[in-house]
Amino acid sequence: LTFDAQVELFRQQPISRDKPTAFVAGYAYEKQLGTHPIDKVVYKAQELGLLLGEIYTLITGHCPGVPGYTAKAALEKGASVIGISPYATSAEHLSGWRNSKLYSETEFRIEPEKCATLALHTGAGVWHRDIFNIELTNNHLQQVYIIGGNEGTSHEIFVSVAHHSIIGALLGIGGVSDDIASIKDYLGRHNINNHIVEDTDPKALIEKVNALDRKLKSQDTKNALPTPLKTLLDTLEAK
Image (cartoon, rainbow, N blue to C red):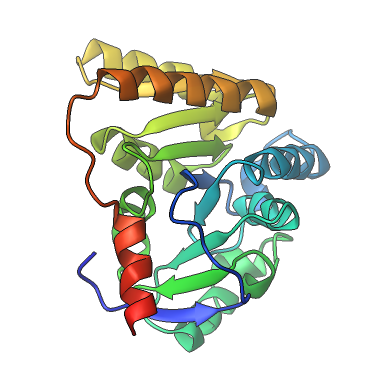
């Protein structure tokens, strides 16, 4: 990582250099839900978060939306959550978020400090920030969990595919994750390699993602290198 990010610490909690990491993406606000009840989507996000929290350090985009509920549930399980902010500073983040159209039109208003261990204010902007979401990992390949979502989540999926990430789409709650079969069909027709699995059950989805991860890792003949997350944590400790 070559950017100078402002670090905002919300919890005095050590972040593991050994736990696998997962990036969580999904709905930003409820107008995207269509006919799917908001309570069902939030419940599924929390259910996924409780399970992810037992396994992973989570990465989020640190903005309002369903992933905040997943992150908050993971924190309750003792997991660490790193929020990757598109803004350069904490003040810019709060101002930009609360003055945005998304914030004014959503009930998903979990305050940033409620769903993260620390935030990295990158100044990278919304679209470039997605690169950090994928690259900041402890894994040989980042694992990405999709909960519904719209255009922003679509971008995150294709960035994840380009970076050879393993993607798990939670089905049955609408949005982009319910269209994952069409995305896989498109990728297949254009001979674009991808690692995508899907399921309606959060536990089964996690099992599929990890089974695919084990399979791909067994085929990887590269020598293990220091991971970006470990390198970042070493840098922060040195400061």
